[in-house]
Amino acid sequence: MRNPTLNLQTAPGHQVLAAAGKRILRPGGRAATEKLFQWADFKPGETVLELAASFGDSAIALAKRYDLYVVAIEKNPDSVARARTNVAAAGLTDRIEIIEGDIFDIDRLGKQFDYVLAEAILTMQSPSGKAKILRGVRARLKPGGKFLSHELLAQNNESEIHQVLSQVIRVNAAPYSKSNWIAAFETAGLKVQQHQTGIMGLLNIQQILHDEGIIGTALVLWNIITKPLLRQRILQMRQVFNQYKQDLGYIIICAQRL
Ligand SMILES: C[S@@+](CC[C@H](N)C(=O)[O-])C[C@H]1O[C@@H](n2cnc3c(N)ncnc32)[C@H](O)[C@@H]1O
Image (cartoon, rainbow, N blue to C red; front, side):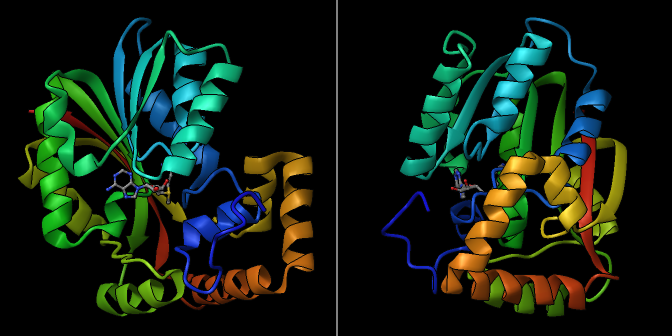
């Protein structure tokens, strides 16, 4: 495990999964992110603001594959350090800036971007927090700029799922239904152009293989088998994901600033 001081009983779900060796921490995995990138139709030299960039995986893909400039905000100092190391190892320090900061403060950036990307972060906010971030996203987009979003979906039973999920993940996790996500975007002045929903695949073995590769998956499985506390937390999460598998999923949305 990377962080020896992590308390596995109380740590947020994404830190537990990262401690198990997972690098991709979003419900629809790489495939859903890939779809968002297709919808975006990036042009070389365009700019992206990424919210909650974690280890810099998406920022690196954007800079390397589409020749974009990325500013990425991340709050956790350990993740910031790891993201900066990953960016340097990819030779992309001239294209990606990782800022240690809070996504509630993006108004301080003072400039606008062609795109904002946010994955697995809006779900963790209260309704007023979601609305505030969405207003901040709109303000950071150039006119006509696009917001690319990848979040958890609760097609039914929103309040029950909020309660059970928050308990097992140890962090506020309040997924909206498709219509509520779309309404929240449009209220903030973000016109939804495309959207897609799918299953919650974070702990689905096929998605883990696709996201982490064979060696990465073997590492995750090894950690789960050999570390009882880690195993306990991950099995608890998996049990809730399975219990609500009819309702729980991912949603990706591409929305344009009006
Ligand atoms: C579930 S992970 C998703 C990470 C990444 N976007 C991905 O898809 O792999 C959530 C990330 O958000 C970061 N985070 C949580 N609250 C934040 C905030 N207020 N400002 C910036 N980053 C935040 C966490 O440190 C964590 O890295």
